[in-house]
Image (cartoon, rainbow, N blue to C red; front, top):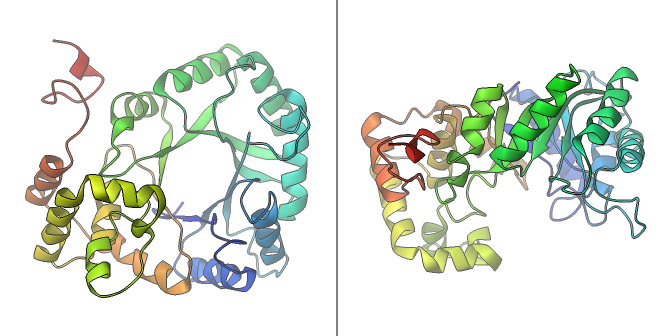
Amino acid sequence: MSRLVLGTMNFGTVTSEKEGHEIMDRAHEHGLNFFDTANVYGARPGVTEQIIGRWFAGGGDRREKTVLATKAYLPMGSWPNEKFLSALHIRRACDASLKRLGTDYIDVYQMHHIDRNTQWEEVWEAFSVLRQQGKVLYFGSSNFAGWHIAQAQEAARSRHFLGLVSEQSIYNLMNRWIELEVLPAARHYGLGVIPWSPLHGGVLGGVLRKREQGGASRGDSGRSADALAAHLKIISTYEKLCADIGEDPAHVGLAWLLAQDGVTGPIIGPRTVEQLDGSLRALAITLNSATLTELDELFPSPAPNGAKPAPEAYAW
């Protein structure tokens, strides 16, 4: 699969269906074959999957050329069995996603969140049925703690089932918490790690430079604005570092993730074709050791006794 993952969260909200189709066309032109979505994405639940499904229906081996990942867990309605990871909801959610996506199988079916009230035996039994039926090839997790990954894998092992193949976590220079337990667990169990929010909601995307140039940025609103206000000096230093090496901050943020051990590919969420084209620059950037050290000093790892990587940092 491609080193960058096309995130479709904007399709059906800030990005129209026509633009979404153009972005997916361009992704294939560039060799980006891994598309990530979820059943709740869109102006209302299911809309984004429907947009992707209508794109697949355009033919040209679009589906065959795509590694397709979607998710289930969050509420799709107000009734009790329209959410979480009960066997009933897993079955219904998968069938509904397949219908909206216009396909007969999902490459990677992801749990959008841990379900603390459903036993792993029930979850894996439901997933094994989906795999036996040919509806899902692989299973992944999202927003899991390292302990959850270990629980899931050991429960799968007891059933002689493959278990998880991927974990999708928030991970970027400003949010490195997964380095404590999630990354080590993923490496131990052989899971690919797919970072979401690689630019911390736009804060790492050159927000200060764009502000000076009179442009708009995602980093200027909502939680991103709060993060920017709290770390203004650090972000200013980061943008200067990027300028010194002649690269865009957004591309440096993605390149840093690509350089991390265990990361399969960060999710980019372009709202336009132009944004997609620009993101590809990250694939050509190799950050040298001096730059990586500067970034570590500017955005230090949360691991205790930082001389050692987690989880060994907890030992002495």
